[in-house]
Image (cartoon, rainbow, N blue to C red; front, side, top):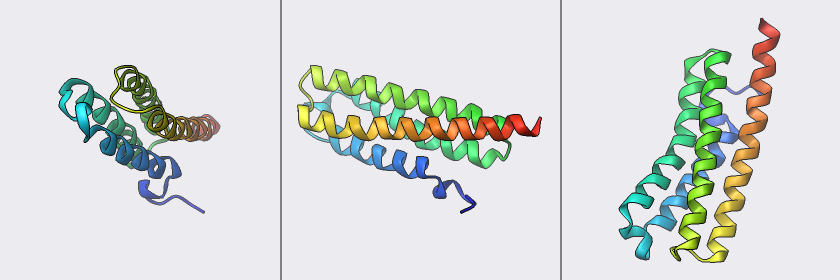
Length: 125
């Protein structure tokens, strides 16, 4: 299947799921009142899906690859901030495991996409 829109990217779809889960976590309890951490983790999760979309729409493999790298880094930022949320008691171990597993999956999918796009880019040179 040929990907025609960024919405067709599995990586973007999973990043969208991750963003939704982050917003559900941050909207409750003490987490909702920690504007620093809440804003940072929300922005990082939105950055994952936004960079995939923007890079795809730019049209070129080289630019898309650069945006994929940024998306993957933002995903790492989300994972790091999940540890903070767990350590300060904003989320339970169960919530942490669930969202961390999703973030790990998103990171792996983005890594695979990065490899595929790099290979395509390098073949055109």
